[in-house]
Image (cartoon, rainbow, N blue to C red; front, side):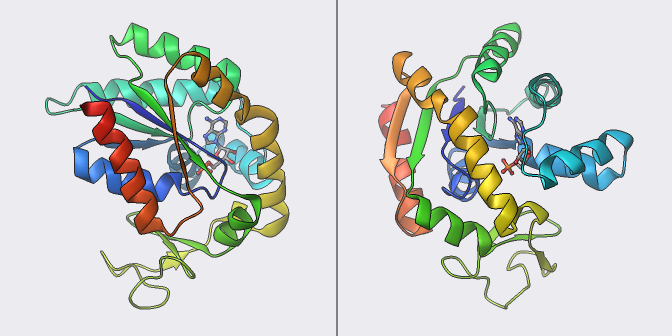
Length: 221
Ligand code: AMP
């Protein structure tokens, strides 16, 4: 079992790299942001509450998000050929690190390593404001660094590409503040636990994926 956590500011490329790496190593990409967006799309009462929170650039409550994570992780473990997960977007606060540890322990799992994608601020805003996602399969594109073959259309299933509501400039700034205040302390936390591996993510997507794969190969050695 290989359970990895990708850490880095919004726009560092966590989703793109996690997507590529999960295919290569047969892992499941578990993005709590995707879980939140699926709940919003379902139109449930909880979804309506969550939409307000995330469209203001705020973080969802620790307890609420860890419950969503636990449910998903449990259902994944029921699959026979499950090899492990790439956690993308959870944990995002120090209290969530303890919640993750507790959930994994309960499920007889362990975090293998944490991969930190270091990225400069100017790259983040540029990347986030040019990010598009497939409305159907959720594949992520970028009109500057990773364009689709036909503008506005997903290469994989032909569905239209959409921009996330929280990728608007005012919301991006708030998300970066949330990251600095609440998520950046996780770097030191996992460094102390000797789980942290990092690389310079100020590179094009293809190179970032290769750097991540190199680290994972080292972890597997
Ligand atoms: P992401 O796609 O990871 O950028 O997540 C989108 C939004 O979902 C975030 O800006 C948060 O509002 C919310 N979210 C996702 N994961 C978490 C988490 N672990 N803790 C709190 N909020 C989260």
